[in-house]
Length: 378
Image (cartoon, rainbow, N blue to C red; front, side, top):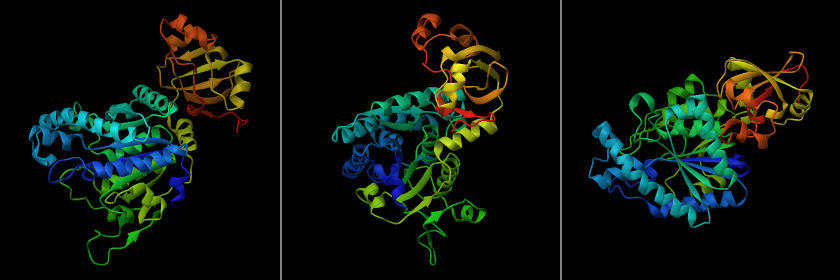
């Protein structure tokens, strides 16, 4: 099963506070971080895209500000202040650790709305994809300086799963203080380790117990919720111990862990969601040249659009129709109806002059487009 990680083209690795930060001193474990960076560099060197979702900013900042290490003993404004201070230290540590292997780190701070609201989702995804295109390593954390209980994830397990879904990752690695899922708390008699979970059943849910950690906020229950998000999006997920040096190398060498498998590919799962779960807000009418391009699995460009219907905004789902009004496909549009009216029929190089600002080259990206007509484009 370790081949899922070895062969993955795009990997998200989540690192918890309890692994990065010593619970007693509040100091960063730089030796462990260096060993993880070496593992990431090995995957990166083989061509994989790497993203890191890293906790630790509040724990680091709490020490610097003299605040309690336990989140439960911090007021909201104290946690936010700790995050503001600690995020600088955390970003510096990741930049240095990755930089030692010739990798460039890029800091991304997200809130719940950045992955749940479609227009902000598209912006975040575009930024991440641009960083990956340039072979940088996005280091992602929840923006705890502004998030409140009502608009936050509360743990980075689910944030990592949302990120993995957003960027069509092949594999999500949750590094934890336990080496996977057990039938009962690992320290109890008779507890049995689960190697692979093909489906999260009520029996699997019953095995989840909240972890006791002074620094982190996630437990096994949040990891199962992350597994639901990831596998539904076509992403395989593994829970593995990070309590050792070179934790990713250990997974590749067959160390004990728990895999949550998905039968669908990330892109296929996303296209099912677009086709079956979203109500279209409008339509784009395209010419015969665009129809031919779509059948070859190409993105829809403004030059191929002849008309627009309905009232839609950027990120909304739209139907794509041929000149006779027949539905060919559905997708997420990169422009509002008003913008489409200004750039339809134009080549990509003419968009900026028409809009007065630089827009995206494609009207609907092929990863956001699913064929729904009678003839498949596969």
